[in-house]
Amino acid sequence: MVKLNENGLFVVFTGAPGCGKGTQARILKEKTHICHLSTGEMLREYAAKDTPLGRELKAALDRGEFATDEMIIEMVKNRISQDDCKRGFILDGFPRTMPQAEILESMLAEKNIKLNCVLEIQVPDEIIMERILGRYSCMKCGAGYHDKFQKPKIYGVCDECGGTEFSRRKDDNRATVQNRLVNYRLLTYPTIPFFESRGLLKTVDGTGTIEAVSKKIDSILGIE
Ligand code: AMP
Image 1 (cartoon, rainbow, N blue to C red):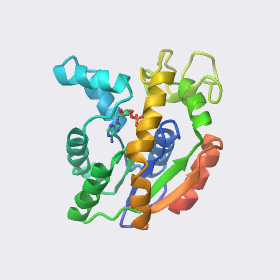
Image 2: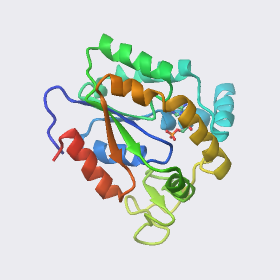
Image 3: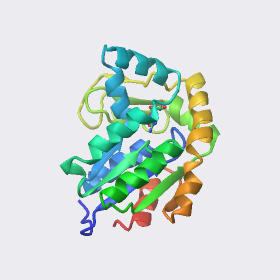
């Protein structure tokens, strides 16, 4: 585990769907033991529940639509107030809209937390589609794989936990990805110049291997 300075490490990973935010956030969490907060994963947990909210959310996610700002902000507010976030967190998939970015700024100011940086992982659209359509994960431990770029060492067996059942995200299909890319450009992209104006933005080329991108991120964050 790397040693963090006394101020901890508070980062936002942003970028288009499929840019590698989740993968890189999981790697950084392994190294630093700070919290990985994925709003997408939190929403998928809600959507798996057979409740009116769960069903409504599931339908929206399956179409590639965003959850409401109110719901997301409430979720994040609760989560970052918990003790395990005191040393730091990686926000993955939040903020995704301008209102979310503005609320995050005031939420953190209230808690006296200074973001270290907002890291944008840049990947061209043609690569994104190939990455998303080929990805799947272990149903037991969540480890991520790809049909072409990251196969398990033994066919059908998870490298991490030996699990043999895998699943694909319902929103990882061509039509939904196209919708998610449109939403990214319209709603999320405006947060990039916002964070740049705050002096927080760093960008990383996300087209290399997982290990190569992770190395670049470590050097931006000052991690050995
Ligand atoms: P992700 O796992 O980050 O790809 O998120 C999956 C889906 O959850 C997205 O396509 C959105 O529909 C929804 N979602 C995740 N984070 C947010 C957010 N911050 N605001 C609104 N919707 C979100």
